[in-house]
Length: 251
Image 1: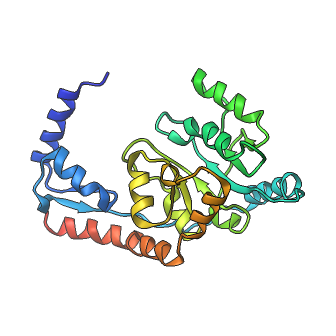
Image 2: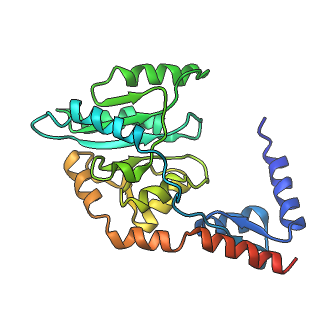
């Protein structure tokens, strides 16, 4: 059960007792200062980096084959989005996907979403009904058993990554998408939107003036190579490790 008063008290205790508090992205610093009531000297940033151990390409090759059979035979190839995600209430993209696709494909098939998610054993009735509807759509290619997807294997085969989390966590997808130079399409909620908009590594759906393939494709094309490089250069495993080592020196 959610108790705002108890949560606020717990945050104050953490802020008072902790010698050092690390957040996982610089955009979380103001939030930590406010919620934990910390002195700035107590705060640090520990970043991650793009995945270095590349997964097997087998599943990505399977996706490419399905796209070739079902999509590339069309006279006008639609834009291809990838949503590879676990099931969780914070996964805002699942709750918005149908409306997004309805808007983009109102007149003809313009955008297809590849959804990779292990839906077997999902207990939530809401999610079961959602995946049932998605599985019946022409503009969704659903892989209900999930699979290991590495974005770099799909470079040139997909046009964007679709990911939106409603909380303040940093989806690891952002690192791998940036490393693969694939823009992210997200919604205007949570930290994902702040990072994508501020760093220029993708598009916030609600920022598009008109919800059409033309505007989406144009906006995706405006994501510059240099913005991906800037995002990654500020977020590396080495920087994260260095921040932790620096913190330990003052123990």
